[in-house]
View 1 (cartoon, rainbow, N blue to C red):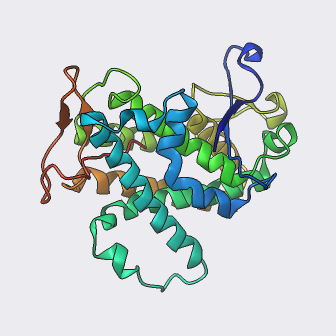
View 2 (cartoon, rainbow, N blue to C red):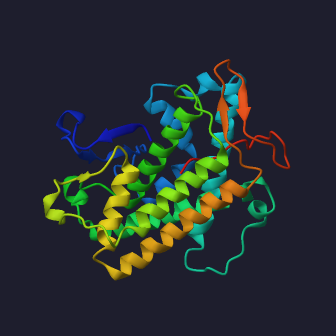
Length: 285
């Protein structure tokens, strides 16, 4: 992956609207990457996000920067292994977890992977219906590309919070997770009482939203859920998985918020059974 594209350009952005930010995967000899290509590339998202900011990951390999970056790389590798497993066993829910993942530190990231996998499937269902005409505006847009773009955006936010791309803002893991759970419940529980303008009122690829592709996906999903009973059930299940993931992160002592202090030292929010291990990492979702 080596390109970040905004549709349309920032200069064309209108007040009160948001334009999707799409991260494009480039593979030598392959004009249009497919779903499997995006899945296989998932583990490289930490390095790719840094590259889009003009930073080579090799520049951050030393000292506390290196320790923190390694924790993110390890986490994405673990999540990717789980996603590959889910993809291979999508039609067989009774397939047991691979022993090499279930009985190792990678197991801590299974819930992260379940949420990411659910998001990929949600993106597929959204683009099947596509009330906002994203496919018309971006013919090459795929569910996998939308999924990876969301994950890149989320990690960029995390990098800013943890001090890799900005001055860190120390956060309590439990309070952060509880705040996100509260917001998810507020958005979902008020869905039926809220009304959205018809899709025709929105400009192609633009929605009334805040400042993230995450919000673009959410509002699109909410709009469809108000009109489509089958999709409403799919979206409800996705919300359930999101909440389960946040509770798992909050309650798992092996996943802690880690950030760089202003003096360059590494802050880790707590000690799990492995202490300050290579997994001092709480992924913000």
